Image (tube, rainbow, N blue to C red):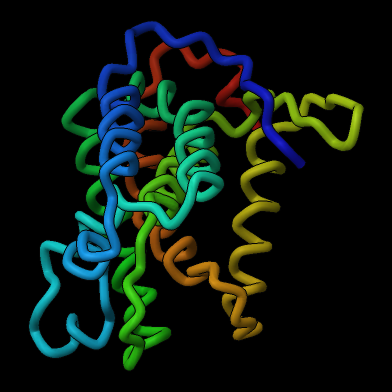
Length: 208
């Protein structure tokens, strides 16, 4: 299932969402293997008392063009409404918290790994969690082959995280940091709850 767009109008300009996209794209253009080794998150280094700052910096690095496109596309679809609801400070706090928890869960699952973890997917998983809680019935227009369906956010994102968790438990080595996705999602839950408590004009998007 490939998301095309959602149906929630944004009331404000999502400056931070666009900033993350632009900064990540610029970094990707100048990225080198040395940068990935230095600023990617390495679990083995973390458990030696190093790499604390890398629990954030890894989220701005990406492995290839498909990696960055997928992450930034999801951020483009879901980030604006989350930023709209939580505000700038809340959005930054969510992004950083989810990135850190994503890295931490990855380190717990792969404590001896010396391979650098890169990518914003942990942070974006937190954004998805917050979105699902704040706007459970928002419509996600989703392409399935050549058909487009309106899928409720709670179903689309709920299915997505269930798949991530299933793969994480399976131990499948696919090059995807499944536990980082799960950890980032956990990090986004309290922000979603806060955003839901702040509702003022969510209308039908709030109803379950």
